[in-house]
Image 1 (cartoon, helix red, strand yellow):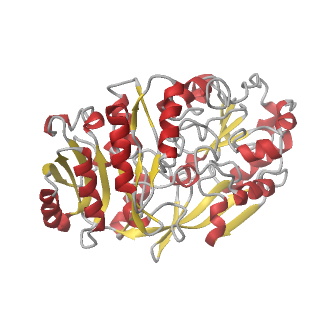
Image 2: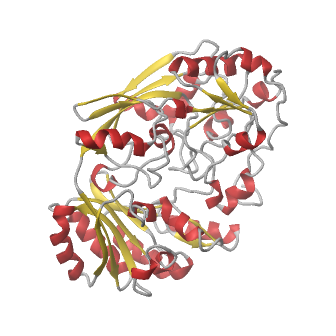
Image 3: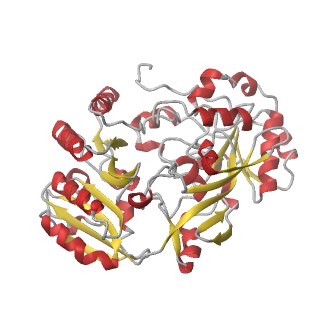
Length: 471
């Protein structure tokens, strides 16, 4: 660690001015070199973190390539390999910690031109990576199928970006996380070599690429398992405090007869900043944001009353209503909603592991109070009900933020650090050996999303191979 407590990325290299050799190798593929547009395509929501905001502000790509077909992707990959040019693969840029921000300049490959459903059969969707999640479900829901779970950025994110950078979301109370067996069925991946190969991964082998930040292969097609659709209802219930809200959420998640998709307790310290919901909330009370089947309203009413709650908002799910979908007040959108009002906050990503997760939530609540207003997302983890915390943090200094993180981990609540751009440090703090080995196979020159896989940089330093590349 340096004086900033998190490792800084290397200084960005000088911009490469002449891209004629690269463009000559990809005839017919559209590119963008206008600085403002390249800068726009170099960004995500890294600024949620004051640490990353300071570290990554200077980092941009040099040129954007816009493939439309798998053959285009192969051509771009080959050109980068031949010229030893860094390559960052990108979807819609809805990530939160610089996953697809180029640290070494070079080429940004925008995959949103590959946006077609290939087929939907027997509850398995075959789709190209650049398709937006909302567009995907507009086609599948009329056929009776929806995504098993999705991020709060459903209206803007792509399916490929979610698989490469996400992990869980709305629906994870039923289907766990992306890495749970059966959720991602197959990946078709292009390697970055002078003569790229197309590799098919299925079964457990898909984990070599799932949530790898695009560091070790370019996904050009994927199979995901779908869920049967339900007519959903959205509601907000108020509770006397966050622990009453949490205990209600736990009981609801254990009520197997209640069909649910989203169970999100949020303390008043965060919920008070929800401008569009604020008029209906009760001052000082915690809330739980819910998506339940319309047929599950009555048993949910009974359970809400048991825990001293009051339903203050209820509607049939409506994607086009004046108040946006309620999932846009949950998961990572909770932080965004609060940031609209209070710029001096940031957030954590925490696991409260079962079976003691409710007790751990209470311990952290009593320890930090309104300095770290609780925001929980209930999920199934290893077959058991558990919850993640995406707590809001009233930010003061990097040192205090690090103290808060250390206190959670000392109490048995692992932090998936949202203040680092490194793959391993943002996850389970260990190297995924399968992902590292696949990078050696699929990206032998170390050109993909340079600087994001700590294991590669420590074991296979390659910066000198591309930093002085002649264009």
